[in-house]
Length: 258
Image (cartoon, rainbow, N blue to C red; front, side, top):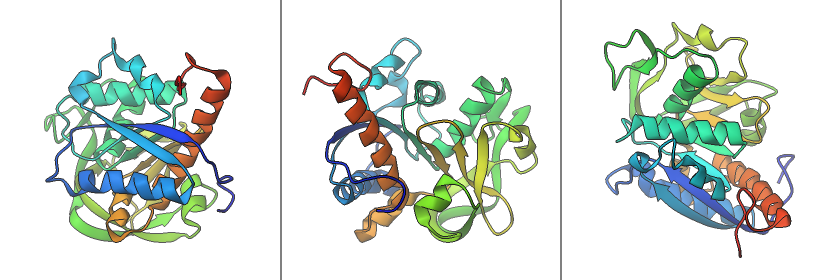
């Protein structure tokens, strides 16, 4: 299984933050990706969709019963504030987090606003007149296409894929604004994958059990019956949290009575 960790046998619970529609390819692929990733690691995986309007500052702590949080594609979300609050909670609570496509974009916004104090950081899709369009239209749309990504050495995502160049599927038209990516320089959120033109396609947060963002949609691999590597390792991190919670007993973060 490589150096990402030993094979675990336990039950993990994953919160899927975002809207759900069978018309969205990624939404159909996500459950299959969890099944395949769980099977590869000997895990029993349960998941629950969390509509963004149901996540508020008053209710977000209920996500603490989950062992991992995945902010799925599908932006603009019904509630941007709900998506941002869920991401913030996972980040500050040390809950393994995966953000793909729209989840990646909103995790960048969350970090910029709440960790870097860039309160005007915004998404040009939902606010075309943003003063600080940290998320902006891509130079070339990546709707229903695949494209190469070059992974930085010494990073988690490079360890996951075990190669420097990958090719993954996309369905997006927005991403980190190249003209503003310098605002992340020196912070804990590092760009770890780029496209051939140098634009950010993957990021990860230092000092967190697992906090990985991809502009691409790794879950799409599940449609071919293959476990997406990113999802498999995300589930390993969630399993570690689940085992720790069960050792601590019911009532602890991530714990269950079962």
